[in-house]
Image (cartoon, rainbow, N blue to C red; front, side, top):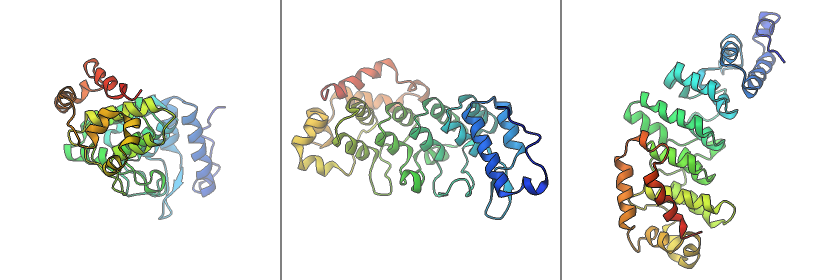
Length: 290
């Protein structure tokens, strides 16, 4: 079905009506979902009114808001265009009428993780080179939407949803494994809660555990006391070796410590994808639990 860009509105009143905003907003949603060409989407985005602001203004979608649509529907060409054309502007906070939680500064990261959009997540992380170092650290470690994500950041969400590919991308680009959510939980706490639930995806959970251990020289997390109180359970879930490390009964092996040092010194572009010489660590860390 073709999209008529010229004849959508009959008059100026219709153009600014809330009902018309809903209609054109849905048309844009469908266009992105159907993976229409970038030039069509940009014509729609810049020429039509999609939502109302609190002050009564009718507005088009910003590049940031359009980028969220590209994420949801995995429109990789449109996502790449928006990031290349608008740079950090494509990652700005959407308007209040578009996103209810203005406390979050990373809706794009958390949406990418939730929908497992690995290719677009890599685009986002690569684009952070245009941020200052402090802005990059703040952006990648910030909490997500309180209403949708419960205040969890991208790293927490990658562990909670067991997304090892997203997890290693975030860690490799400088996400802090010690960052806490509003309840004080680290990403490791989220992952251990998932492991405690058992199947499914235990192998993927162990892969995530291996990645976290790789980027955590010190094991600081809330559930450490629970591991110590129930060693039999946790030894069965994560293996004797990992239990010893996480509970502080013994330090990681020299091999693991060497790999941890390497991850701190290797440039980001060489950690994506994980280089072959680090992949054996992945298998050694969860082999004991398989």
